[in-house]
Amino acid sequence: MSVLAVDHFATLFDEQFTHTNTTRLQRARVWEYVQGILPSDPDHSCRILELNCNTGEDALYFTRLGHEVIATDISGSMLRVAQKKAEASKFPEKPEFRLSKLNKLGKDASSQRFDLVFSNFGGLNYFSPEEIQLLCTRMSEMLKPDGRMVFVLKNKKGIWDHLSSGGVGSKDKHPLAQAAEHSGKQLWYYKPDEIIRLFALCFDKVHQQAIGLTLPPVHQEEKMGGKRRLLNRLKRWENKLGQLPSLASIGDHYLIDLKRR
Image (tube, rainbow, N blue to C red):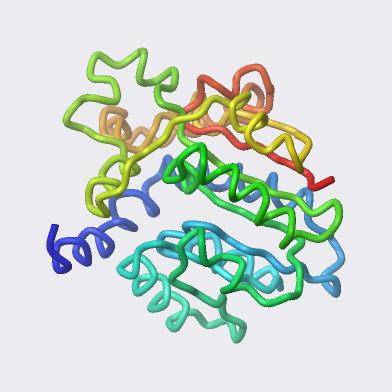
């Protein structure tokens, strides 16, 4: 895959994923959850480390809330798009974007510890089991006591994939699979219990919930025919059912909240 092709994909990522109706609705649920665990006092900002930030949508959001954000990604193309968005932002405070791989995370971040480590929409799906165990050790060193990690991972197949005749192997690939192809990376799919086990040495589970349970995944949004009223109805069901921990493994993604011991 040429550098030009990778840059082109990064440029289209927001159009094909970030700015779609279903992604906005799913991301709003993630933001609502994270806001619920961050301090409500505007004078008490948090230090957040984001892993695999893609085009920086979440980093920009948390910075606007007054938090200090260091956002990392393995893709220079994604970071270039994120940096342009930050430069165009009217807010004076900007996230700090860094090209970083897992084995450099400890060196890239300063000695000041983080309140939250965050990764959205499949960022951890790029890590092998061995890399996640290494991440467990690194994050326990970089987080404050009782610091939190909130990750949103892609399930291999969610309920919408089972209902669809195409499934995840159809020509309408999920953007995460497309991004992996363009970056030349392998994807790893974990069930919630597997993630809990891999982080069990240093972290306890606080909560898990589905993201994209009744809301369709983005690669199936066109099949909804742009029916906003239907999407809003599905969102209401998502808000009710998506919070049930037992349904986390059948959503398009799932959110998992871990606390450092």
